[in-house]
Length: 231
Image (cartoon, rainbow, N blue to C red; front, side, top):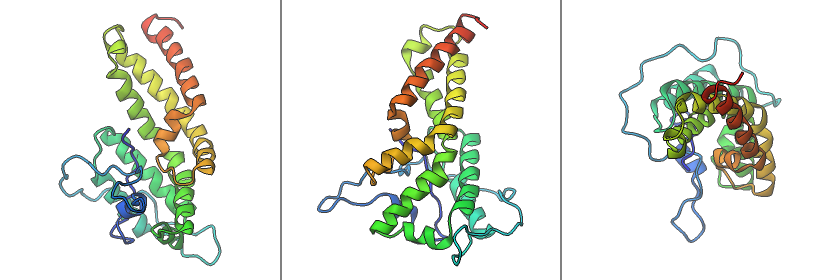
């Protein structure tokens, strides 16, 4: 399953994001599972300047003595993020995801912590996991929505047997996106305690037993409401 986080901090912080989340196994050229889409669609034209995702308020780190992420760094991240298109994410969802993670990054992390993420050390791994739980997980509703909708509408059992398949799928995706906002941080945090190097947050969520159980319950409700007309 392709995962959907595009951590676009280059050229603000070096090395590139791909070097952070795709580490090589020792003695192997095969990369570990990645939270970055390394096969985006063809490069897009340069993205025009957009309204800053944050205002001119002072950004302060939660950790005393560390450097706060500046507005310029956040906006550079945001512009880089929306410039990299993904086959699953809609343009709107891409912008919402990038905006959400931009603000969360500024609120939850310092410059020193971001730099530590790029280290191939236990401290670097720990900080990458902090980023997953504190920055990405609270914003996962956007990729979760689009991937659920895509999987639902492309399921032949749905498209060939339901008269209102798109409405049912949108109902499922919207409701599960809300569920994701509330539950994703806890699901990912629990999974990372078992396997600190498991860095595919969307796959962790979709494999969670409670997530799948809730999906079935929500799908049933959506079928009754949109396909059968029950209130």
